[in-house]
Amino acid sequence: MAVRARPSSLPILLLLLLPAGCASATGSANPFAAASGASRIHIKVQNDNFYDATIWAVVNGARQQKLGVVTGKQNADFTMAWTVPRILQLEIDLMTGNMSCRTDALTVDPGDDLELQITADFGQMRGCR
Image (tube, rainbow, N blue to C red):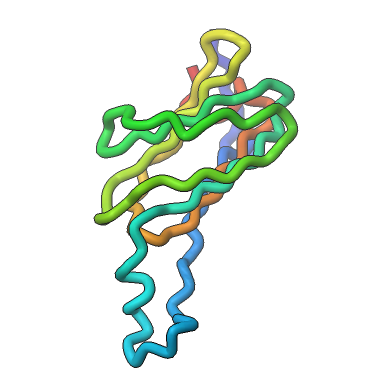
């Protein structure tokens, strides 16, 4: 049985794209030279849920790589090889049974930093099953 709530009252599953720095410590005349050489992305996960969560990278709609496990009420950082702009979703599987969520699709560029927040009330998050 599904419970519906007003969108403003739903817990938030947050996936933010933070701009990568444009300045380079190398003193290059091209401020984008350092960013163009980036070959990975960084993903910071904040797990506000009690249960451990396994994080999967879903690239262009297909589950591609297990990033790792985030212990309940803890944070974790992951890096992933990323050489060209592609569509990324993150899938969260709670280790309590058959509960999982998938974030909205986002175009991610090499060198991007992402943040994911797993809310305490996992069942109320959009995209959960």
